[in-house]
Image 1: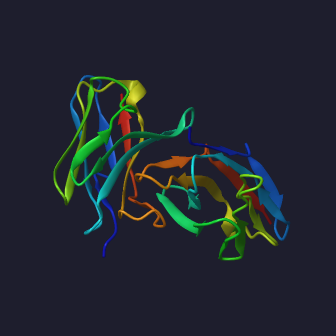
Image 2: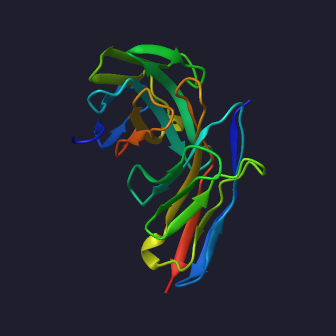
Length: 112
Length: 114
């Protein structure tokens, strides 16, 4: 079947620290992969995406590379800011139909 | 485009009452999703539609929940009767028929059943 497994939180980092949130997936075929971010009191917003193997998605200093060999899509940022405090969701869209599969979310808190 | 619009943003109701949540998807999107988010269970897919037709409702918790999409620009999620354990944030999302395209989420409806 299709599923997404995400690193459990919560994660607490100091400002300017390096961030990694692990995400691995199980899917048939070649899904598209996404990272969403949810700020307090808001809906989920797309952060970045990658639609085929070896693609790198990037946005606002965040990056993730679609690794088919390890079925992973880890989220990284070199220097986090307080404003990055949010919940991050990894998701996949299978290549047939339009059903999205979301991970459980990882809460990130960045302290000054 | 204004994005996915949900109403109301907040709803407080008494146990046993009927609750109706509303969603207007982005114009031109073929798919509409209803999700429920709680601390305990995270983000759960309840049901999704393609071209106004329900495709998979296996996530609907029980018969008290029902969803409709009478046309391409409107969907409702109804809970009757409501119970305290239904308290959650309910999100609507829409997407195009394109395997490369993300889903766009509304701001959510925070439901509290007392």
